[in-house]
Amino acid sequence: MSGERKRVRMAGWEMGVVVVWLTWIVGSWIAAVMGIWLTGPLVLTLGTALGATAIFLITRWAIRWGGTRGLLARYLIYGLVSLFACFYLLGMVGAMMLKTPWEVGAGRAVIGFFVNVWVFGLMLALVKKLLSYGGGVMGVARAMLLEAIELKVVLGFAVILLIGIPLLAFVPIDEGRLAYRIQTFLSWSLTLTGLVTTTMTVILACMSLCGEVRDKQIHSIAVKPIHRSAFLAGKWLGIMSLNTILLTMAGVSIFVYTVGYLAQLTPYDFQDGKVIENEVLVARTSVKPVPEVPLEKYAKDELDKVMQEDRQRVLDRGYGEAEHQGYGAVGEDKAIELGREALFKQFLRETETTWYLIRPGESRRYVFEGLGGVRNKDEWFQFRYQLKVSGDRPGNQILMGLQVGERLASHEFAINTAQQLALDPNWIDEEGKLVMTLVNPVENRGNTVTFRADEGLQVLYRVGGFGDNLFRTVASSWFKLSFLAALGLATATFLSFPVALLFSLMILMLSAASEFLVSAMSSYGRIQALGGPTFIDEVIRTFGMVVGWIFSGYAAYSPAESLVEGRAFTWGALGILTLTVGVLWTGIAMGVGILVFRKRELASVQV
Image (cartoon, rainbow, N blue to C red; front, side, top):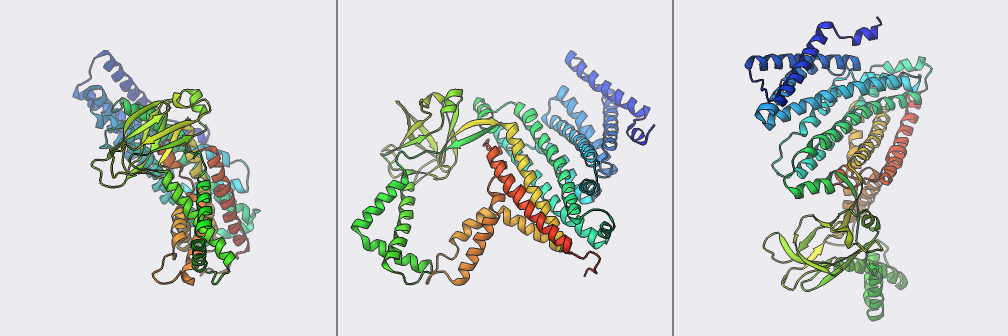
């Protein structure tokens, strides 16, 4: 018998224990169905011992067959599985006899961990097999993968992910509603997956190349028929192969526990079930209201009125803008140009604010277009709002009128929190428009209602399912990790490990905070107690804006947040992210790394 067959063969006594364990499990369930309870202490003790031993042996066989012996150390994996196997069997007994949720949850968490180990081992064996075909880049990638699974740091990250996701599905939530529990699990599991894979990728990319240069193992490529660019590309492919395995395992685990377990639990009430069905486990897109008369026209009319009645106001504003922007002394024509531009922006902001504002005794009409598909599908959709109220208002709600067509109804609107209302698709007209009028009654004296301009008023409707939305979310993580792997390798070509790691983490933090950086730098130095912004202020602001703009593609999309809220992370958004981060940024980082690596004298003394 070949070495491979010997490695995966189970001994006769091992198979016997597995058969006994399976027989006991099946027999227990048959007895439970027939009403014959196996409550004897001897039977329970014997079954638990045999079950724990069997799960121990099955996992051992799975690890050896999947080739993960080096990654999941024996003492750790065997000990954990043997320990948790007892909880699994106690959970089964509790489900049959005691109906206690803790034991049932613990048992299911163990099953999830057990399945994750199998999936990880099988994926690893498959990827290793695929990388074994061909040499050059593929050979380096396979060596990189084998090197990675032997590192203790990778072992730690993998075990965190293997155990963490199953356990998160059973974390008790004080909030009684099931929809909130599902959203919490999605948020925590995606955050855990992102932290583990991101940190592991940066550390592994920097550690691998820096370690080989430090230990002079890199000298061996000089005598091998492989180009340095192919060597670096192989390193990147090996790291991304490991990320593919981890992300696939995490994505499958999240999907199974969300759809196969959490979504099958009993909702808090009927409304909770409808929220899960229509607002959580879906992929929805949003439509914002469109002014019947463009807001730009109102702003332009107001600007023309000022030009005719108070031209000096435009001149004064223009001279102020010239000084503020560093133009110095300007002529009247330039002042008029700057003044008109500044006033137009001001009037446009004021018009938009007024359009989202409803005073007591007033009403506002909002039109949502492009909803013909919702009307044809005859699916209920949601109206999402977030408002604030001026003046003192007892409680957290305000009574307002909501009118669609001839239908007018009063509704309690929540204050300072985003809420959603289910709407009938028959309210959409034949042109695919939803015309909605919101009324602030006279009785709400002193309570002016203001909606948020960005997401304060919108209509949400289904465009896809949870599974494909989760797939796109995980895929977006893969392309972001591809950039981080290339970045880590590029910095490792000319820096030592600590410096390369710190530099890569700095770039990661700048990328993640790029949107905040652009927002903060846009107003930096604009407000001064005396005079305008200094030269240093302008340099800092410009540098911050440029850096934020360069890395804005990394944080421009929030697929995890969209998934939790039941929003669609579209194929178009994934395509843009792929081209910017996955292709352009990764290509630039790899190109810089290859150029530096090709010019570096590897045999020189490293200080």
